[in-house]
Image 1 (cartoon, rainbow over the protein chains, first blue to last red):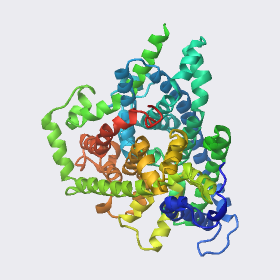
Image 2: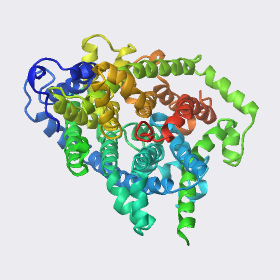
Image 3: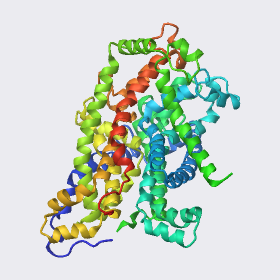
Image 4: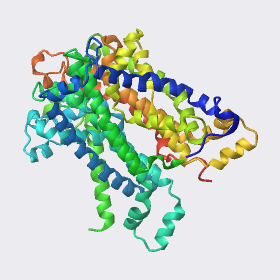
Length: 295
Length: 285
């Protein structure tokens, strides 16, 4: 860690402060401010009185809470594991493609679905998963899925959301990891090869350790994204006509608290729970992935 | 099987996985409702059906789709400009300058970046309603412009891929901090500038939850929120709409295609930057 410049600069504003000033204003207004406000709401009543942990005990005791946590956890396990294994494998394999045109064409093809995030990708997948119009109806039928409602049965949803998230998100991470692989000097790879290392050994011993920071980074952002699960179950719920409830994920529950029950304090309590979980996992990744290694 | 055949099969399998849904999207938008069910999923429709779908899409709520698309463009571009002006200098300063509070800002940035954005949507809504900004463009543009991911990406880039000696040399040559940033660092940072701009635009274009809460009036919806209104009017996914439903499935497919078209076009153009690798600046020479 670099130390603060000694001497006269120490107490006055440094040029660096000017560079970060605009960002700091936005950070306070739309990052820290709202978070502190959620914290305030989570520990007060709707009249603004101190509520202790009442909002938390109330939401924990809600019969919809634990199932929602279970749904999100099942999805996160599937999503993070498949992301790590497949994205790292694909990035290494694509990077090893000798033909430049083929390599860049593949990266492009993998990346295209990144354009379809949010509601667009969910809508597209609602069609792809509808056996009556699906381009992969034979595959659905191989799993004995003949109707749309069979496909989106609640037990299938963690897998379905994983497929959607992987389809839209994996390509951009492959491009990012590919870029990181390009920063490894040629000489290092050449040296490993000269020493008789196979492609696999080079990947495991040389490339993978140098990707570690990026992989941790990918996992942190994906975890943050995964706990937020909202638009996917929301649209599936809408399209399933009630087969899947609007309380499938924790975030949907927080939304229901705010907009259906008009209980902003309960909603804030749920938000704070999501927040604490996310920050705790992030701290673990930061420590293990050495994200602050740059200095 | 040889390693080469195995990797070839793996790459092909995933190429199909990533492209088939898009191919289907393009084909299905040119089909009539009957063709969508009866014809092969891989058969093209007809120009006539495409025109029909287009006409019924435009007819939906008197051209609401065009309004939604215009709104999406407006919000995403305004936020893009603000994001770049604010994030790139901040990421640069965090990586390469010394100032009091630098480490604190870095840690706070990382933590806020990890906070689920939706956890902040509701409190931000209350905050903005306090200052009377709800149902204005600013209620989505300003929160969109706060993009710690962009700051962090810039920070990582300057911290790992730009040689510090180069900047030291510029300073020794008498360049001011602003001059060093503008004339030396920024030209080297083209890949990361393109990347941040790209992520900012696509994220904001595709954002659903924030505008859904901030903008209660249909006239102000971006396309993503508008799409769900169309979904609710499509009989396949909502039996209650009935036989004379407003939106037929191929029309919804076409709307989905339109909602992604601008982002698709944007990244056809930014592809050059993206695949050139994120670190193709001064480190190679």
